[in-house]
Image (cartoon, rainbow, N blue to C red; front, side):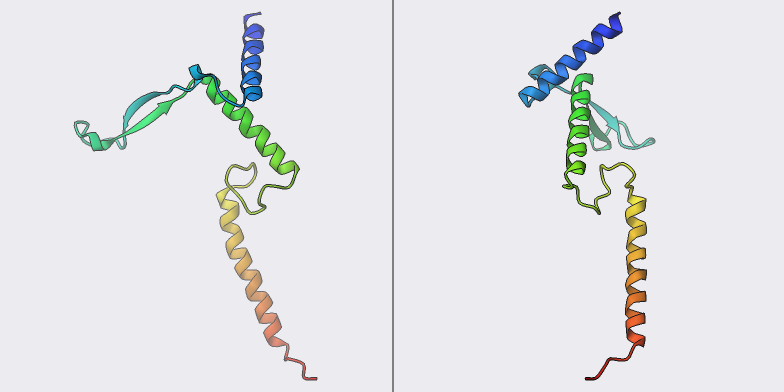
Length: 122
């Protein structure tokens, strides 16, 4: 019963944020924690730390919903560049890296096959 009520409340908050086009002010605050960049470095020196911002659970949920809806819309309407690998399912950097040598190989084959055919004189 509590889980159902919580789910309904969270859904209502996300929908209200989407309708308003913004997050409520209470969800715009982050807790910033300094973390060591690497293990084994001198913890006394400030330069060895990096800031990590922890946002609220609800703001992260809204962010995911917006990203999901935007990605779906862009894909449905053909607005996502075909060669974009970042932020796309089933499109990794590995896929992008494999495309480069594949394209080079295809171009080499095209050039070598056209070079073997002598030009036609008319």
